[in-house]
Structure formats: C-alpha cells, structure tokens
Amino acid sequence: MRRTTIGAAALVLAVLAGCSGGESETADSAAGGSGEAAPEAAAPDEQAASSDDSGGVIDQAAMSAAQRHVIHTVDLSIRADDVPAAAQRAADIATGAGGLVADERRTGDEHATLTLRVPADDLDAALERLTELGEVTHRTRSAEDVTQEVVDTESRVTSQRASIERLRTLLDEAGDLSDVIAVERELSKREADLDALLTRQEQLAQQTSLATVTVELHAPSAQSPGDDDRGFLAGLGGGWDAFVSAGAFALTALGAVLPFAVLAAAVGYPALVLVRRRRQPGAPAA
Image (tube, rainbow, N blue to C red; front, side, top):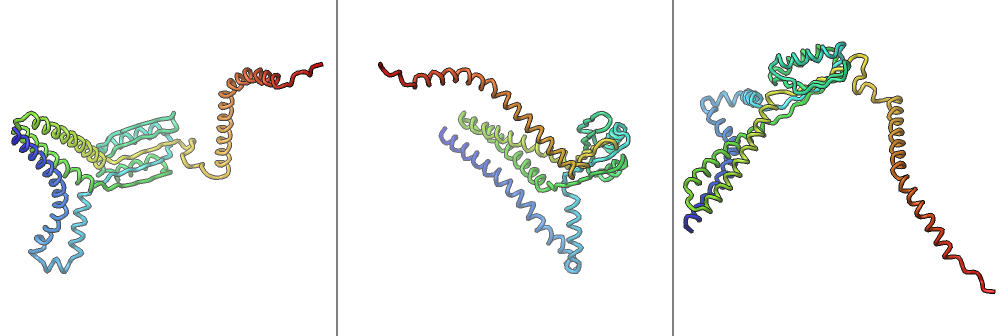
C-alpha cells in the first residue's frame, strides 16, 4: 500500500510538472515556430528573399494584421431633429448589420442613449450610416489589441485539458483511498481553472467579434454635453451650485446637532448653578 501511495504521489507530481511545462512549451513553440519556419520557407529561393527583404516583411506584417484580435469602442454624440425616430433608426442599423442593441435609455423626446454591438467587420459601414442620423457633435474611437491574451488563453486551455485527461487516467489507476482523494482534489481544481479560462475565452471572442458603439442623441433645443461647460457663466453657475450645496449641508448638520445641544443645556445649566453655589464661602460668624 505504501508503494502504491508513493507511486500515485509521484504520478500527481509528474502531471503537475507536465502541466506547467506544457504551458511554457506552447508559448515557446509559438515564438520559436515562426523562427524555424522562416528558413525553411526561404530555402527554395534564397536569392529572391535576400534581394527583396522588405517585401517579405510586409507580407508577414499583413498576415499578422489579419490574425489580430482587437476590441473596438466608439462614442458618438449626434444632434437629431427627431430623437425617437433617430433612435429607432440607429437600432435598425445595428440589427441590420447582424448586431444588437445592448442597452437603451431615453429621457422624453429630447435625449436618448443607445449601446450598440456591431460586428467588427461591418463597423465602418455602420458608423457611416449612423453619422447620417444628424449632426455629429462629438466622436471618439479606440482600439485595444488583445491578440497576445487570446493566444495565451488558448494555449492555457489546451494545456489544462491535457492535464485533466492525465489526471483522469491517474484516477482510474489509483487503488488506495488516499490516492483517490488526492487526485480528485487536484482534478477539481484543474476543472475549475479550465472553466474560468473558457469563460474568459468566450468574453474575448464576444468583445473582439462585436464592436461597442455608444450613440447619444439629443434634440437641437436640448443642451449637448460639453456645449456649455466652460466660461464665466459656467463657472458662476458651478460656484452657485457649490454654495447652495454647502449651505444645505450646514443646515442639515445644525438640525442634527440642535436636539443634543438643547438636551445638554437643560442638564448642564442646573449642574453649573449647583457647583457655583457650593464654591461660595460661608457667612462669617458673629
């Protein structure tokens, strides 16, 4: 039984070592594979490769750009004559492109904010149609390259699945109860880690496949955010708001303290009179 326990423990350690080694080997192979493949690809025609090195670099850069995973985010502020109609049209643009409306908020007929998810491949066409809804008063666009995280996550998922299979094989071969418990504990941990990796992988897939476009629509009569946030009047208005807020806070604090002050005065004043009377010297004897 002791030999079985030692053997099972050794197998668990081997599995764990193989898991960590597999992750590093996968990352190294991703970096080293391109370095080894380049000489093989250049071997058939070394003279052409040496005479046109820049062309090879451009081709490889183009290939890398096609395989990138990028999260696109766009913010639009549009002044529209008919906000409800423009909001409906914006939703139709997103769904027509194969996307969806993730969130929609309206304030009467003067303001509307929509969060659209649009396929990344059709983002430019969708933005061109959205800008036709009215006058664009504000526009920002950002892109976050998460290619390295996507590659690392895929590598870790593959490694975790391999380690789980090895642990299951070890579990079938374990005969001692303590060995079974040890392997099952490690197997549960590995499966939980795999679930977390798969969840993150799904999140990355959704974020890179669908761009996020936030569209804020406002009527011409309504103030656009940022239109009047500077200048003397804006500063005066901000100072007045701060003064009113400070006054309201002071009155609130006074109202909260006043009952305790009245109670302290009602109890403290008689005590003070009594102490003073005791301190007065007695009348001199005749």
